[in-house]
Amino acid sequence: MTLSKNPARTLRNARLDRRQFAAGAAVSAAVAVAGVSSVHAQDATPAAGSPPAGGGPAPVLPAGVEVSTVASGLQSPRFVAISQGTVYFTEAGTGGDTAVIATPGAGTPESTEPISMNGKSGKLSSIAGDGTVTVLVDDFMSYTFGENGEIVGPAGVAVDGNGKAYVAVGSPGPLIASIDLTGEEGVVYEVDLATKEKKILANAVKYEIEKNPDPMAIDSNIYGVAYDNGTIYVADAGGNDILAVKADSGDISTFAVTGGLDVNIFPPSGNPARQGEQQIDSVPSDVAIGPDGNIYVSFVTGGPFPPGLAPIYSYAPDGTKSVFATGLTMTGSLAFASDGTLYASIISTNLLQMGLGQIVRVKADGAHEVIIDGLIAPNGIAFDDGDNLFVAVKTTGAPGGGEILKFTGVTSAAGQPAATPSAATPEVPAVATPIAAAAPVTILCEDIKYSTNAVSIPADTDVAFTIQNAGVLPHDFQIDKLKVSSGLLASGKSANLVINAPAGTYTYYCGQPGHRAAGMVGTLTVE
Image (cartoon, rainbow, N blue to C red; front, side):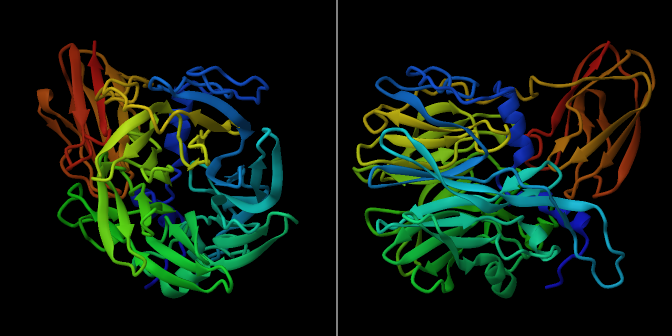
């Protein structure tokens, strides 16, 4: 496989499948829409159903469920683990001050523009039974990633019950093929909880570069982890596989290749990021050990994060796979309650339209019901011995805005009614910045959105439109009522149109399969 040494091309291709599932830009927007503009830690614990400490809407809770904030002011909290009454959680950090420059390929001039920033700002912390928060490790590697400043760093955490924690530190996805690696990203650490000393146990990035279990692009961003009887199971969200790491030796093997998920949203040429197949990347996000001894895996899925496509797989210890549940969306984390029932966090019900997240209960037959709604970007979840549920929220987007919330009464609660704040949003997002134009209008087609979802032009006037495909997938621009169509535009192509319309409101959209439903739609106002 030939690896691109062109960072711009690497990032452009990465936008298609968005394996870097934190998806910082969209989640940042969701956080902003939800009302998190400034955040600070507060001493008071909110009453049941009140807004969490950092601001934003209150979660929607069923009768008998109460919520309190146990940690706030966090930098992209990702996962939660609980052992012997102590809560452990990771923070991905803020990147850092060190510029990361792409390594030039043969015959390519050396670049001076950073494609990322890194630093040792990632953390592992604990919350004692009395509520005391202690930082155990504060120097894990953290990277910014992509055009929108997404953060990767410490993610999954598991505790073995014998004083050792295992922390997965992510890496900047497809950039690993074009930068000089420090050796501290894409690794599983062992942390001695008594001494707070850490050591590298296994290097998943090195394994991805050498083995590439899912034979697509070289890409790695390890995320959720689980510990079971001397083995650490690691979900590589970038590599589309589950790794098995021996706790005593650090030896890595491929437990399962999750590969791609079948979809029908691409043109006949398929998804170029998956060798022309009608697939998106599976993006495994978390691993949990079930009471039956099986290994359960959740998925975020690749972009455009189609609602209802994410499954939960159950793997027997020998690797035999079965589908435990289907119909989920952007599943971030899994946790089993004491009665053996599985719960999952939904990062967003519709990321491209700023949907809020949920906690859902997944029954033994795979059916699922919403228990908690209206959460801002929830990810890591874990139950303590009393079946109190701890959830990391605002996991990306608002600097210093992350929180760990504690919910009581979850396991006995009935499911939420269907009408909740995260129900289907209007076809055209409510938040838009119209372009007022008698002058020419340029609309960019991006993966998968338009550069604006609201345009205003004068009535009965010729207005020139340029529709330019700045994305990877083919796109088009259509207005049915005006019989306007750009025709199919390949990546980098454009079309020039002239629109002259009577006063009214018209919907424009991309007619490629699945794109309109994913949010590639807008309103043309003629007045």
